Each structure stands twice: as C-alpha cells, then as structure tokens.
Image (cartoon, rainbow, N blue to C red; front, side, top):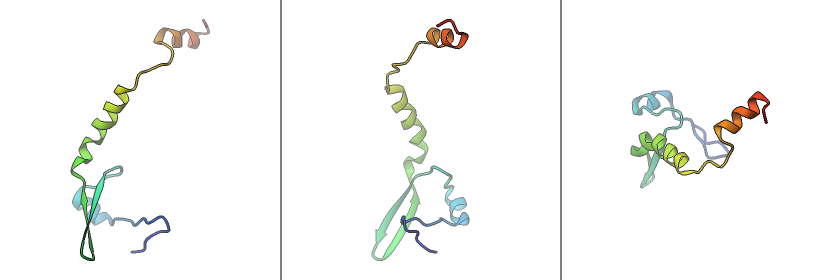
Length: 76
C-alpha cells in the first residue's frame, strides 16, 4: 500500500466492512513500537449529535419566515 503526498492511504474494503467504517466515520491511530493500530473511534456515533448541538447553539440572524415569504411572492 502506498502513502500519497498528503499522507493518505486507502483502508481496504474488507477492513472497513469488518470495523463498520463508513464515509465520515472517525478513526483513531495508536503507535505501539513500530506498529500502528487503527480502530474506529468510539465517539463516531455521536458526531451527528455534536454537529446538531453546534448548529442549534448558533443564533439565526437572517430574515423571518414572513419576510422570506414576502420576498418569494414579490411583496417586498
């Protein structure tokens, strides 16, 4: 397996399937001597919850629904 100029490698499909690594999954690396261990991050399932919490914590400063509807109808 070759490492790209960006330091990337492709995880073989058999390993991704065995560890249930999906696109956007988070993984962890651990170096033990001269061996690197790869494991699926335990917090992988919480990523969506963290993203949603961050979005909900951001105040909305745009136009109201009524203002948007008026613009859409050409009332504005």
